[in-house]
Image (cartoon, rainbow, N blue to C red; front, side, top):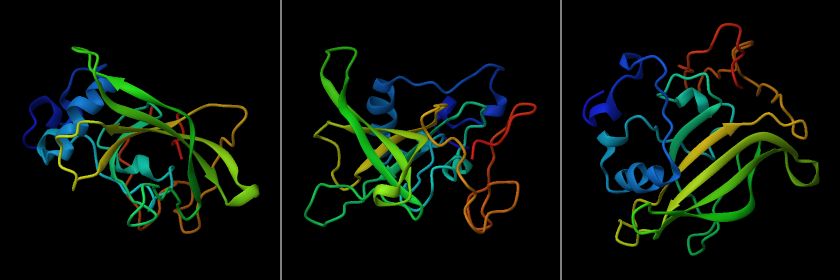
Length: 202
């Protein structure tokens, strides 16, 4: 990768034990701000993904970061249901993302100013009353910085696959996936490195 210094380097060249673990403040104040400003070379480590075009178990295949952690980062453009509205479209072919809990403010460490918000979304497979809550969760980061360009309405998403007895832990493989791999022939290639004996997080 070019540009971006440490951020743009292939993680395989970094020391053993290196993890990409930015704080909420860094995600908003650095990565999301750089993306909105068009400084793409500074954020090559985080891919851009349309959250409505892919199911949650397919998104990890886009990850630049090779990791055993069930956590992945990506940017997404907000897709509004109506051209004159503020409600986001969160539906996929297999289900939908449902906001849950209260939005949380992200504060600057220097002057304690609110620089963004964090929304929590849970993925439900299916539609209506028959929809099943899964263990896929997105923390969606929004910036509150008014001086940033409005024509680049990006959010930064932290996708997690949680272990929870009260959710459906095994997502059925969508029709057309390659048997035993969880990778769709027309979908992204999964470039994550898994530990010995580990199963792909799909």
